[in-house]
Length: 336
Image (tube, rainbow, N blue to C red; front, side):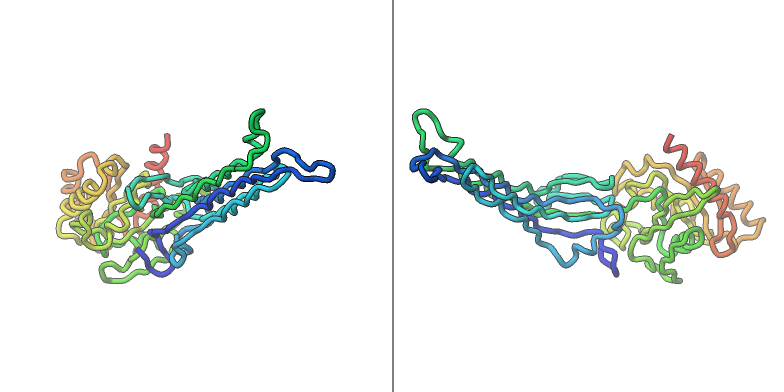
């Protein structure tokens, strides 16, 4: 999905360099008219390497460059000198990038640590020079090995953002408003569905200069796991979150039904997502008076037995500190 400068999915074709030809040189110097073999080995071909870079957050730099080719290895020389290695090509990617083989769909590696490197296309080995083939019965071999050929592969680079808390909810539930209220992030906010078209990350400040990262993804609708709406493009972005915050507006027709639909979409997308810690947050509680809120709590205690929930309002700044306390407690419990 591409929107503005945010790109989280690209296909690229990478080709390594081929190995250099070994040399079949015979030593010829003054007063040594018939020296033995002294041909050197060929240099190895260049690798194509994917490297993690913690300062990057998008794959935008790969949007317009889809082919990467490493340099070829140099040929061996006289006096057993080895040819130069081919120039490596390094592709920098943000943390959370998954590399897949386009043809087989196999996941080659998931990059989650800074400076992690992975060779996606290995350069060909250089050929051996004739110096290696000398023997008592063949003292002047006039042949050498060619270098091994290059390798090429089509790969998919898929970004999964790394955050502590993932916001899950229907379109227009108030996810972006919450993120802007408790962090310095400024996502686009509007009174219409699918205002958010790309994931947004915000660092949420907590007590004593502590903080955690929250991810806001486009709203999920019923059938998202099958491709409806935009949510299915971005469900992978909350796969790595340790805690899921389900956001449901207080004016929803049926809060429990909305929660069940969201939970079912996550289950159909990846059943392992149901193992994460969950917190239900009822937004827009400034629309409720105390009596109505008390009635809703009685119903929700029955509907959400065992599942923590709370009320808050981003606009009225109600319940935000309680929400942060709850999330911080859940995050630290999951890390123990």
